[in-house]
Image (cartoon, rainbow, N blue to C red; front, side):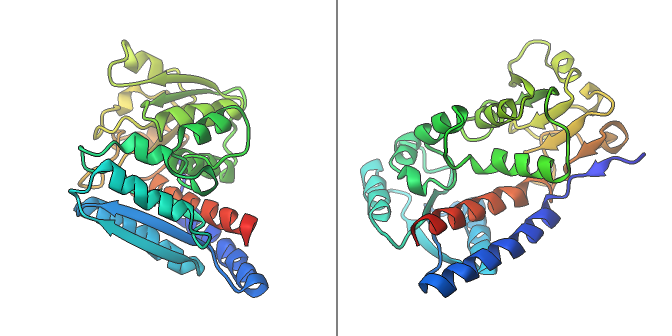
Length: 279
């Protein structure tokens, strides 16, 4: 039987149609729509592209996007002032600080300045803690999008051994907590883990989130595993080797078209949810 392709692009499109209806209901009942504020510091081409994609997604569902571009030489306090201004703006329902910011800026301090009620990208420590404890919070967009994708395709999670390769604050760590909440047994690995191939071979569900192109080899993967590649690198490759993957995995995400569209989709969905709470 051929491997199931976990098509995030098609699911995102389907979900956008539902979000469009929710936004329209808000507009009809309140005369307003949810607003996502995106903050871009500097002029990194990749970051500019990502911010544009998020703005386009807002437009597709009928939301408004407030695009804020700040010079790369601003300091941390100036960025914090802008975030506080957006926190205090009742017409803004979600705030996204595009990662990464220039190295001289304290990115974590900037993330922590975002009001929890508007942290629709799930980047604050408080949001992570609440999510980990099963309390209401907006999940980090990429791992939350992955969970949505797995559930849509009815991938069994309870009791499965999930191996997450990566430990970043906005991907690997929240991914592990979300899988744990779905009753998986979770192992967190990273690029310095000893005997990494042996651990990956134990995975019923493998999440590649290490940030290195094709770092995880197909030969390390157990036959029948569900494989999710959260990486994206120039040339359209992910963190997991593509060659032969479709003959080993029972299901896998394509790169591109798998995880990426679900990240943006989750960001938009959580902004709509934020708007629905206050409009």
